[in-house]
Length: 166
Length: 198
Image (cartoon, rainbow over all chains, first blue to last red; front, top):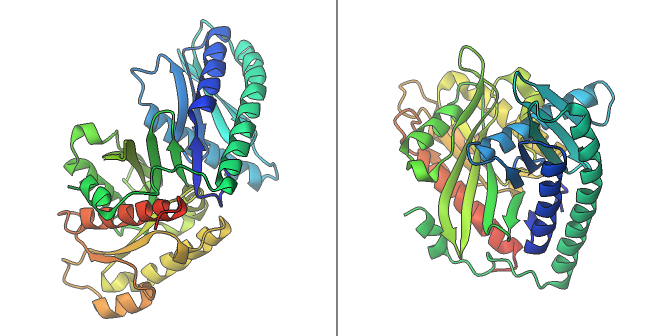
């Protein structure tokens, strides 16, 4: 699903709902402000909490850039990756972790929570999310192999594409 | 690698602007940003040095409209063009769906163009991509300047595949949207092919 040679990463309704349940639970249990999931290429997968005043698209892109840069650093010193990053601010802090080497989990929290609590809850949620992304990966593979992929793009016409730019 | 989200009915694609230092990659994005309606664009992010040279990347999210009920979004990235930022360039190519190579038409940058294109090929191969198989267009920027290379000669060296190519002047915007449309179209055609369409 998230391998570099696959043409697309696909998210389905069912898995999206399961993911949302897990991150909403994590938000409550860790007393954090915002949680979002990003793929390693910088695409926002899901988010919850106080996201309305946040530029989540930019956050997703910069998070992925951050993970990519620290991943590069890790390789230079002979590590596979740094699986957890933590940024401490005056009020808000960001905890970033990698789930199953594929997806990035970002937790933003303030003094109502603590690094210890966030780390503890993230660990449990990561396991649950890992299972869901495994399922998603299997599902995408099965659908691809069965040849029943109902991609919305199979039927697009040149006119559809031209209309985007009109 | 495009991201098709059935839950939010969105499709996201990544376009990378590549090319030698100071060829006008950031200027391309800035022009697109200036000329795009506020509801269709997000914030443009530039991770640049104090002298406004790109340090890591520029990022501009664009929402183009809907295709078959799916919101179509393109994420535009530039790479840092300076030779010594190669490690960063590699990272930005991850998950790319389409590439714009911005060439600097000035005579004195002739070799820099060739070097950068070679670098693009090598870096793509490291990620398991082949330039020939990716949606790819070339823009000959700064074509308004007096000291430009012979266009035929540039074309021969930079575009032996005959991919779509555009003369441009990114500061005035000439050719900027034509380039973007062209690569976006190639990406969507690629998605169609991948989805089993003809």
